[in-house]
Length: 468
Image 1 (tube, rainbow, N blue to C red):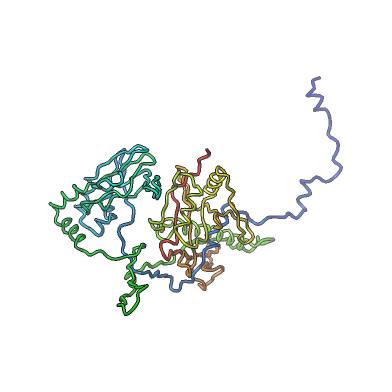
Image 2: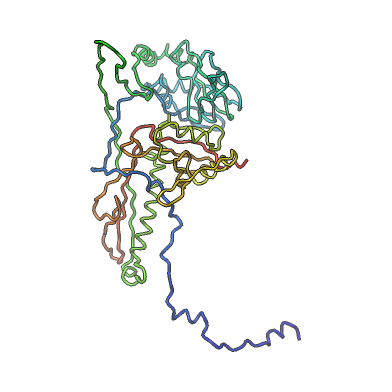
């Protein structure tokens, strides 16, 4: 007889007590409330000051400023060929408010594509400037001379930027800095000679350029606002200048955005299955959590009012070495007074920590509502997984000043709406249909406003996958 047959012939001892499987039929099961992996810390919603908005609209009145074309240029890529969208040339100060589409299209065709290897100079300080560079892809640093004759980096240009635009209308323009490619770059160049040549044949362009030269220079402060004439330090009976403060004639208005869904619960479930937890309440709780997650996502990414899309181009910085270093964070802080918080993807925070470790630095932490949050220069760095990380493993770090009193970033909401269960969030009963399904309309109203441009800054194209 084999060993297997011997094992089969061995009889199990008789059961002497009730088994656990049967006993569970009489036991009361302890249950957890429904769990949800999507829930995050939502620090932005917690830290943003919320302003009550009556009538659903918030108007941001600002002092009059004179825009000089500080936007970015958009390109179209076909294979290895890159071309500028003609209307985007209107971002250049020399072509601001110029609306002849045919002439802009011809200027776009005259833009010459150049592929620049890393380290090559595009322009040299002190030489004649005769063309504007449109940066389609890559990074270019502005290099100048420090106070002791050493080389210093004045700034970094990235995708969509332009430089040398003053050369289009100034015949004796010179380069004030050296432009050097940090990475391999694709640029388009538009020569001043081509613009003037086209102006000889296109009356609209000729008139536009002549008008620019005829308009007296508007005195502005460093922020582009119309300067207020003041007199200080005078003695005797000096004539005191007259002045006034002008406002924007068409200030921006923010309308409250909306996020909605219809929650459906069968009446039989709502009636019978409510112990130990109310089914409708649990369904509603998870729906509200998802709605708040979407609200924070929109506050960061929405094209109309999201923080990433509403940051002024003058407040967008590029990291000097790709990874977020303490130097980059210092530069981001230096662009505004009274910074209240950083907002970064957890992977960006980890990348910043690695850069600190390389330098032997230990970022401090601050206590925020009982939570220990990493900080830099005393400003807390809050995590947010709503900030996107691209396929190229790059992301952004947001820095902001908050509050109406500080002319910062504020959240917008309207409390006191009908059937409100949380500030600016309502649940309205919609009735029961013929299939005995109960419907509830769940609605959240919100938006965000940047009161002055320097309240919000973004460090773009931050690498999060560098481990060396």
